[in-house]
Image (cartoon, rainbow, N blue to C red; front, side, top):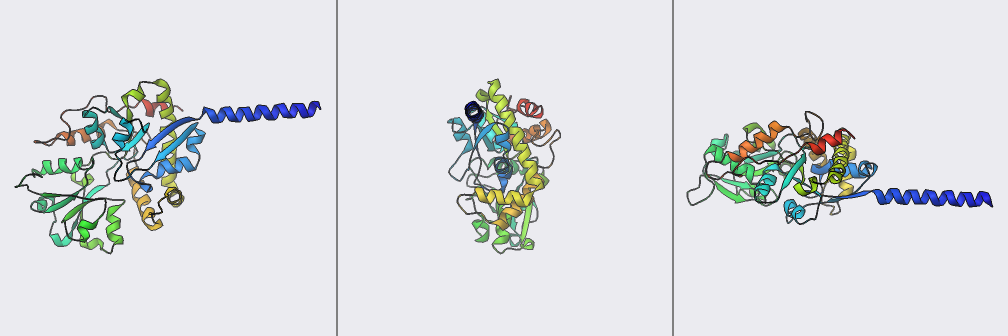
Amino acid sequence: MKTLATAALLAAAALTGLSTAASAAEKLTLQLKWVTQAQFAGYYVAAEKGFYKDAGLDMTIKAGGPDINPTQIIAAGGADVIVDWMPSALATREKGVALVNIAQFYQKSGMMLTCRKDAKINDPKDFKGNTLGVWFSGNEYPFLSWMSKLGYSTSGSGADVKVLKQGFNVDPLLQKQAACISTMTYNEYWQLIEAGMKPEELVVFKYQDQGVATLEDGLYTTDKQLSDPKTVEKLAKFVKASAKGWDYAAKNQAEAVDIVLAADTTGAQTKEHQTTMMQEVAKLIEGGAKGTGYLDPADFDRTVGILLSGASSPVISKKPDGAYTHAVFDAASKL
């Protein structure tokens, strides 16, 4: 009887311990910038491989979409962290939503203008007089800075270039509604190829090569969250686990693609496209002077300089103060 009683007590204690461990998991919600795809593979891999769970986190990853603005989501309290491009985040910060970069997984820009070769655009100076497709909802800022650098006006009856508000597809180029459209190295360019266009029919201008690249997918939270030491500790666990997810995804791309496809509840993604995307995304996360996810202050300053360069209508009006912190990354490095 004693043996049974002891066993029962031990079992109860074990269950209590499991319950306590489960309840100790800290909830954290990440809002992505776009739909479930390999652009965000590191986060999905970290969730699937148990990296977040091992860090004591109860993670929720929210997919984005054309009607979802991450900055509005976090401002309304719908997420703890968001993935956003720095131009959008800094413009939002200047408008009163105190966003702060806590990690920068994308070290290079994947943004391009892709043009039809038959439009006879061989150099940026040839943009003048043409229609260019541009994404908005915060994605237009790097483009506007580039046009300003070229000295081209983008609005008014006598605009140097006509801006076509581009949907999140490649139809304007396929249907010859625009000479050039916005594309990413890991996504829309390959949609054009998959639609039947050949590389020799296209001319690409990478923002990275043109000296107008700004930082893209970074992690942002708010000043208010960072004022709480316990939240900083939780975010550090998240950044460390996410970095582990990104490193794993880059080294195990086929598995990462399968994980992304399994997470895609819409069934819209294809293995072929996601495989190409994962290959290209892996190139963008390479770097990080102090490890995966490190924001180099020089890259921040370069992005700010580009955004301030618009003589008539700069994206931001002054260099932001407190728009990034290494506190979370440094804390993550010590875990």
